[in-house]
Amino acid sequence: MYIRKTKTRTIADVTYYSYRLVETMRMANGKVRQITLLNLGSSYTAIDESEWALLTDRVKDLLHGAEHALLNVDDHIEAEARRLSALVIKKHGEALFNTTPTESHYEQVDISSVESSDIKSIGAESLVHKAAQDLHLPQVLSTCGLSNSECQDALATILARTLYPASEVRTCEVLKTKSALDEVLQTDFSTLHKNRLYRISDVLLKSKDAIEEALYQREKTWFEFEEIVTLYDLTNTYFEGQSLDNELGVMDCKHKSMDCNHP
Image (tube, rainbow, N blue to C red):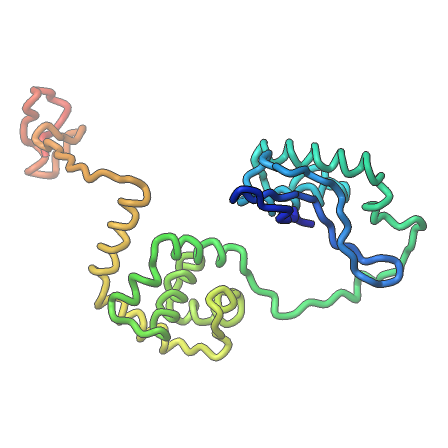
């Protein structure tokens, strides 16, 4: 489903358009046709053109019975989507979009026969990879002189140990058997050897200061941090208690509190 913008005419250097809500549907004979669901007129300004895709997706969901959006949409898009879907149903009826079978159909399934293999985690991996991209970590590693393969190994070990803090041996095992981070990074860790992680750890250690400084500057800009220097006066600090066995702990408290000892 989409909104079709069609040029109709040009008069005195002014171009006029028509707007239609169009759905691509497969007919009973197997042929695919584009059906005009609504004529939106010659000037459709209810929703900005950049948001038409979100609007039509939501209209389609509503026409197929999805009252609640899977992803949050802005209120103005939701309101317009509900208005248009109501107009479509009023014009064409619900039967055009009713995908519920007229007759119930049942199949027997042996739940003990369900099998799975090579199950790996990908949700958390996608999240930390997105965070690394927002921090420009791949670019930072590249500017530190790492090659493309070294950048991949460095990202792998950093992100994997963010999720599974452990040694290089354990990280190697996780990357090969439990994590789908290689799919996120579009590479293959099925033959990964722990020595690659040892080597890249040494490379990262050599560039530690440059990497930390680059990430610090990025976070400071991203979160709008301000550098603040805080000074603590420790001359008024003391421990409570007698500490009779410690010669340095029997010094008098400058506040003249006899149950407190000045450090």
